[in-house]
Picture 1 (cartoon, rainbow, N blue to C red):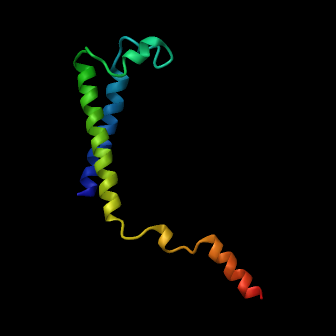
Picture 2: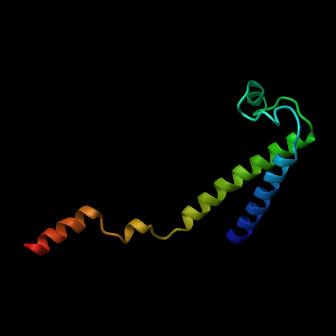
Picture 3: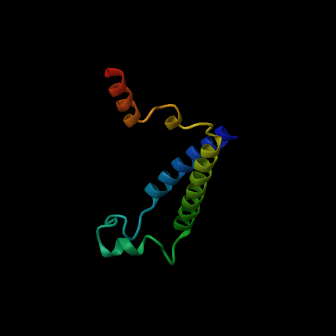
Length: 98
C-alpha cells in the first residue's frame, strides 16, 4: 500500500512540475517579484491548464499529508528511544571518573 502511494506521489509530482513548466501566460516572466504575480496565486478565471494544475496541486498536497500521516503511524519507535540524552551521558562520565 505504501509503495503504491509513493509511486503515485512521484508520478503526481512529476506531472505537477511538467504542468507548471508548460504554462505560459500572464506573470510567466515576472513570477512573484511584481504585482501581477500575486494575482496569479489564486486565479479567479483561467484556462483549462490552470484548473488542471490546481487540481493536481491539491491532489499532491493531500497525498503528501496522507503519506506523512501513514508513515508516522507505521513507526514503531523513534530514534530518540534508543539514545541516551547528552546530560545523562555527561553525568555517567563524571560518576565513572570519581
